Length: 478
Image 1 (cartoon, rainbow, N blue to C red):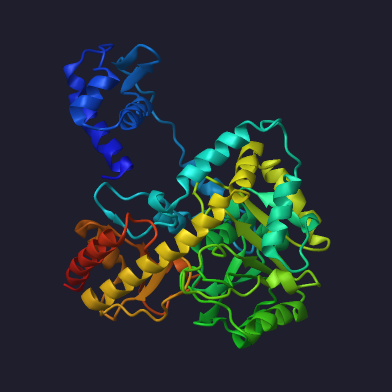
Image 2 (cartoon, rainbow, N blue to C red; image 1 turned 180 degrees about the horizontal axis):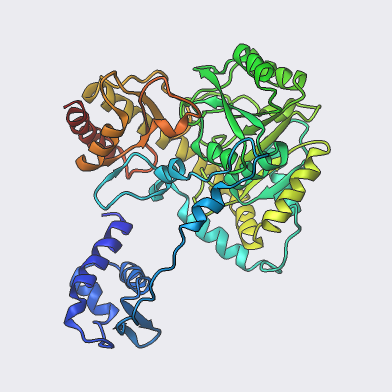
């Protein structure tokens, strides 16, 4: 059983038993709970912490846990309806109303109920994360002199240097800013490069987190269709001309959700088209470390061969290490770097030094390359398991492209299988999937599902999840 499932089940059991104790009454000791429920001390500690956060128990270090005293009478809620008017009144000059819709992001961040197979995840399962290497790196980082001091606003010089070497080409440490993960870097880049109301060209389909960032900034995402070889240059040129946009956001390597790779001549052509339009290209290189064992040599980032400073590069360690290692980088050349730096400082001041020191310790250890090699093999095996299971158990789902990197498959639903019904039926059958609608900035051409094979425990759970998805499909079809 997964640790978080054990925590939830123990918390539920303790919650049901609280009526046995009078207010202020002491609960059994942690040791007694370990023996009674046959769980680890960590599980007991986390379950009690959950109940404490709900106000049901009070924990006293060295003394134990006690049932909380009854809460005081709840103060009647105020009338917050006025906020609807205030939040929607962005002014007549606002071309696109600012709104914050996190539903597409929450679909991959929210953990499903215990027992539900997590095909909707956006991060590596704990079994795929380098937990021992992370723990060792954190311990070493904590012993570094000045580990809790204030870091340079641009980031630790050694970490900027490492990111520059990883990006390659002519990028230097002076071109790099350390960020609080890739999402923070994307948000900074879009705010720096496009004003409210401006059109922003995006791949169709594309990452919902980027669409949410653009819309929250009052920008207008304009879709540019892509195929198995990435964004189409002919349609990109037309989109720049028709919209007047000065910004394109793309994922040239193992694009989310399709897994496509921008190939061959298209790579240089995309940069040339943007340069001719006087536009920037934000290159979200989130999957650089998620290549599968059979991926072969990967193309260099677009920014590596960009002397004119057209490309603003985004990179992160989060996807390939841990969702809590929120350390990433922005790389850019020219005056735009100063604007990016200013946005970063205003938003965050700096990335916490202990996180930067931990990242340095991790990527500088032999364990990091071992982890990446192991991850490449594991992701390939899981991709193959899911692909085979879908083709055998659910051939009605079309798989236009089987990627050689990333952590998901992009499946197209047949006509007559409504996407919302499929997602809801999946939860009833015990499998969570990400609906495809959130990945489109305009009307989608068909229903889709994004199926992650990285957020589950292993091949057996993938096979079981596809079996449950078959049940959901039959229910949704009626």
